[in-house]
Length: 182
Image 1 (tube, rainbow, N blue to C red):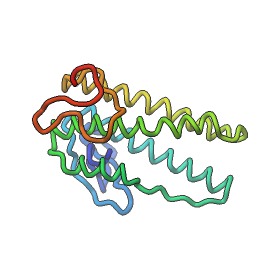
Image 2 (image 1 turned 180 degrees about the horizontal axis):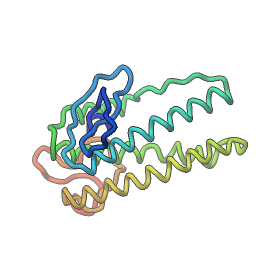
Image 3 (image 1 turned 90 degrees about the vertical axis):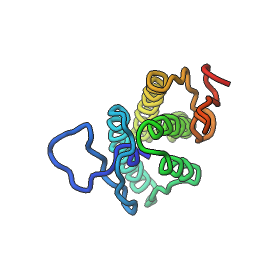
Image 4 (image 1 turned 180 degrees about the vertical axis):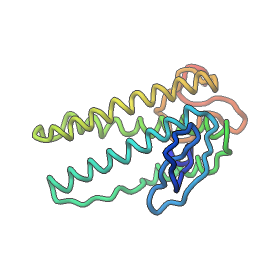
């Protein structure tokens, strides 16, 4: 999802730019940026980099503590969300869809993160700490996406509780769980 928003750079320069992309995910093709908002591109790059590091750390914990070598896979519901973003028109339409879909993506991870922080073996302090950091980062990201939805799309109080379909319907009428519509 983040790669569709920010695009991917197969070659990096030392110059930082608001329009630079992220590193491509192994076994996925490079993409062009579809987001037009600088705020979305920036947060997508940060999310992409941060989540890669979190995955590496979680894989290390599994390997060291349990001897498990785990490669994450994209779940079917996330594949559906990615497909929506792949088909969204670049620019404003993509920006709107991305904010809703990625907020929902983060929201779906709160339950396993809560379980990690409260139900994990207490001897795994590093895991509890990492899960807490992830929970706080994702809570903050959802809040930022909700703010952008209100500021840039007039969607007041978006709630990421519904399915992955964007809030706007084909006829530009609002739907979903928010205080600004049905």
